[in-house]
Image (tube, rainbow, N blue to C red; front, side, top):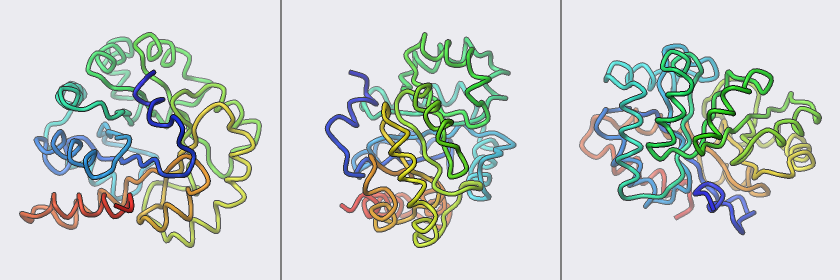
Length: 263
């Protein structure tokens, strides 16, 4: 069984926590240790952001983190080395999340080969719709990588069913329309209830993970308690940003992760 499938086995209570961090933020050398420590603090899945200069699905927080990571000299080869280093001591599923331009520049076949060899488990490429992803999926699957697609509140039921058919690993449910960013839990909960009912009716093959706007354990329970789990990105990046470069930035970040999990 794959690392990603294993995480979801027997779990349907919203407890699976996936954390997004931008590779190389806040420091190029901090990512590997941060991933390993976040796993100890309760992370079940890591989404490792591949920084790009024009992250169109991301709000100001992740845009900032991407800019810092690029200035820190992070590129795809650096990220593959990070994943390989994490794999020396961890089996936590690693999902590479980013945009298609750097991948095409690197070479689609070469990228998927290196991603698979390094120990990555899956890809999320938000700007590649299903209709344009045939080559990406073929190369990914050839190298043991799942391809995860997204649905949003404005996705029609037929589209959700198509996403379920085409996705592997899990389906990423964007809780609100718009770019990434922490929002009030009440705001998200109000908008997501009917959406979740549609999602659960349409997504039958894959686990369901909900992201965008979750910033606390209470948010996670309220928003994702009746699906498989939740994804936190912007609130985590913001926690790092607000504490770095203080000497205790990592401790405060890990305390935030433990609180998210409810540990």
